[in-house]
Length: 254
Image (cartoon, rainbow, N blue to C red; front, side, top):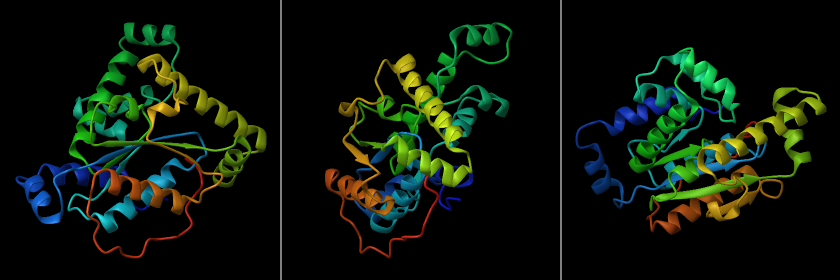
């Protein structure tokens, strides 16, 4: 669906970073040593994954690096499980939403999984490691709050009207209107409570972000270009001659 998003690509990014001398060589040969990262927080159906994919493509064309600009969204879970040597079945206990405290405590007591607090802490540690490496785009999981004290990270929030977001969810999923509405409300509520419960922050607070984009009024290509240009200017990067930036249609849900 998104050719430049996936676990294999994320694993390639990590393997590339682990090559001896890679970071030093890349800095001297391909540009300044500053290695920015980007976080994307999004309302459901506002195009988070589509814009992240286009943004990675845009930045790689203008700020080319050997360890390609890489998107970590759902793949953050796989990366966290690897970092902390957890079994893959743990993924089902790590949703990007609020989980009732009682259920969480009972499941922990019966040894079904570590507590949600432990899993969130481990996910946050992985987010920090990736953000410090640079050239990553982190979608969701409170990444903007986790990395808020890092000087190399740029934070974006994607928003849109409920009506337009429902249309996008319906286009991609084939859900009926009332089902799309229920899905959006559940997802948005879960993400909001995830940030409130674990980080005591309001996901809708504009002060948490450098840039807030209304995707009702801006096409995904334009949003990706705007973010890319802001990152290039903010971190004083020197772009290379751009190649053609794809305007191919991508699914409109995120």
